[in-house]
Structure formats: structure tokens, C-alpha cells
Amino acid sequence: MKSDAIAFGIAGVLFGLIAGWIIGSQQAVPRSAAAPAPSAQQAPAGGGTTARAAVLDETQVQALKTVAEREASNATPRVQLGNLYFDAERYDEAIKWYGDALKLSPKDVNVSTDLGVSYYYANQPDRALQQFEQSLKLDPKHAKTLLNVGIVKAFGKQDLDGAGDAWKQVVAMAPDSPEGQAAKRALESLTSAHAGVGKKPGV
Image (cartoon, rainbow, N blue to C red):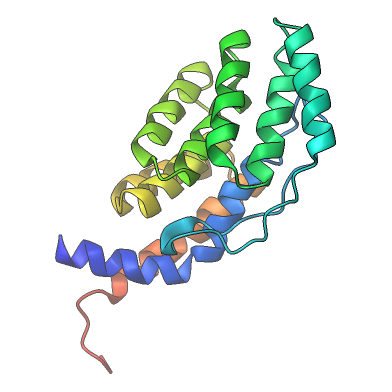
């Protein structure tokens, strides 16, 4: 356990940037919504994100809420609201709207994973992993979900072995994709961290 904790600390330094890309890249998935994708954010292993939150456009929020109220069976405005609140780092509200959208469109793997990422940023890693499990039931080969599973396991649960397993799946499925390349870099950092554990200085 102690060596794992040390390895986690080293790994956090080595692949903090890759973690930011992985979490942030989930938002770059083509959405049914028209909201812009946020920039990549640092995983909150150190107690919060380092990227500046987007300013919430209240006019756009109100317009979307009006559409959502008028079109009770339309998931799209709810996804858009989730995106806006996520970008503004108002994760509890993002969770609400992504959850509402998922009720209307339960087979949308991207919305399911966005909900999981929101749980993670709301400091609910167990719920995030549970949501990712639902995403993978919809699409067992959803690369961005698996990338995010790795991040949550590494940073939210300090489970480096579990993180490595998730990233290895991404590399095996799509080695040349951006997700596969990111997973390779994360695995390299993870391997380097483990290799350094227990060595004496200068050895």
C-alpha cells in the first residue's frame, strides 16, 4: 500500500498534463449540442482545476431552459445546458441536466460519460466509475470512456493498476487514435513511476 501511494504521487507529477487532456478530450466528442467544447482541464488530483472556468452565459441558459420546458421529450437543450454548466465548473448543475438528458436518451454514450466526468469533478469518483460502467454497457469500446476510467481510478481512487488496465484497453483497441496516443503516454509515465519506487538515490 505504501509503495502504491508513493508511486501515485510520482505518477501524479509525471502525467498530470496527460490527465488534463484525457478528461478534457471527453468534452471534444461531437455533441448533439452546439455549445463549444471547453479547453482541456487539469485533473483535480491536487484539489481543483487549474484552467479558468468559462463565464456562464445567462441569456443562453435562460433560452435553453425555455426550450427544455417547452419540449419535454427533447434531450438536446438539456445536453446543451449540461455543457454550459460543466464549462463554468458548476458541476452539480451539469449533473442535473446531463441526468435529465440521459433519461430522455438513455442510449447516448457520450452524455452518459459526460455525466460520469461531472461526478468526478464534483468529488464523487465512485459514482463516476458507476456511470462509466453504464457507458461501457452501451459501447464496450468507447475509447474516451476508458480513458476517463483510467483517470478516475488513478486520481480519484489511487488505483494505478486499474488505471493501467483501462489505458491498455484503449491502446489495444485504437493505438493510432488521439486517445490511444494519450493512453500510451500515460502508461509510459506510469511505468516510469513504478520503476522509480524503492530505488535509492543515485542508484
